[in-house]
Length: 132
Image (cartoon, rainbow, N blue to C red; front, side, top):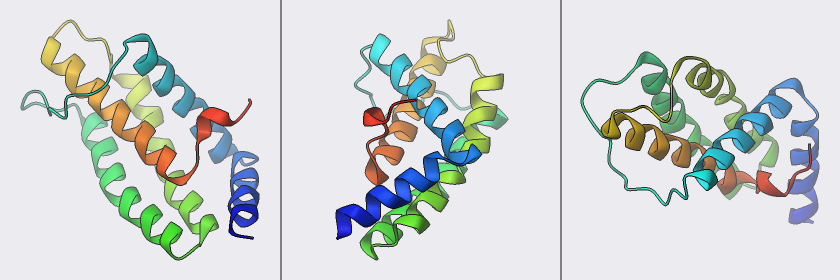
């Protein structure tokens, strides 16, 4: 029953505009990470963060615990709602930040941030298995 509830919540979520856009952003992030064969370093890389990087970090810091608590409570709709809060920040990140910056510290930091986004989404549902 738990799996069915999770699948139903995921299906309903990806049928919304927010869910569809988040799926697109997830796939973009996952493709960049795959192309770069990025395993992550965990390094924050430098001291000057672009506003879009800071916004995404803040959104991930807020959404991660909310999604985890919702999953623990088997509130899969709530977990999807927590993920939905990432849509705006990840869209702004992609619109205004060059991931593969020539500065190695910025590039590393941004790839690590994309990895963190991908992993946060994967904790709720494996978006890599979704067509679309």
